[in-house]
Length: 269
Image (cartoon, rainbow, N blue to C red; front, side):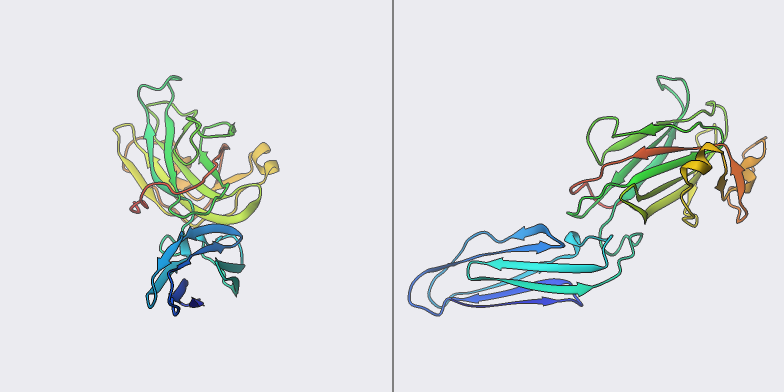
């Protein structure tokens, strides 16, 4: 059995060629590990004399976006090959290495157990890499509170956060998804929103900004990009976007454990 295994960094693919040059049937197989986690396994491939196998495995889904130095290990029946490369990953680029992102966000006002509105959001991750991010939900009137897991116990599903606003309030806020306690500097996704009592919801992507510290949360020194949201709303004719910052009441933090492969990637609002 003759074989060659190569890694092409520009295309981020592992290429495998194996040929049975003998006069008996032979078995061949290989597995691919990326950044110390298994990504793919070919299983056992049976080759008759003269047969050739060609494999081409993309590794993008297995890359750890939080790392700068990366490794690829290809283990075959006849040996193990190692490839190393350096690459800074844009964790907010949905067209690159898969990372957790918001699938959708909505405001539920009616038929809630508390009688108060809720932010309902869904997080997805198309890749094979497991991340443990936190989602920060910030509005004008809500008190700080924390959720340690998804409400249905199924990581990566739908999350619901109760707000202190009334159902007939105009609700303005920002949601950020970042690296959590283990990688607080990692930014995954963000969206700002204004929800009106008539059901109209406006969303946009703001600058990510800094996640406030615990001291800032406790002392209510939290900043929000939307200056107009501080005003007492009198109607829907409000421009929700402003470059200036203004203080808000508090922050809600949702701890979301994101794992595995979840659904198709969302279409950006």
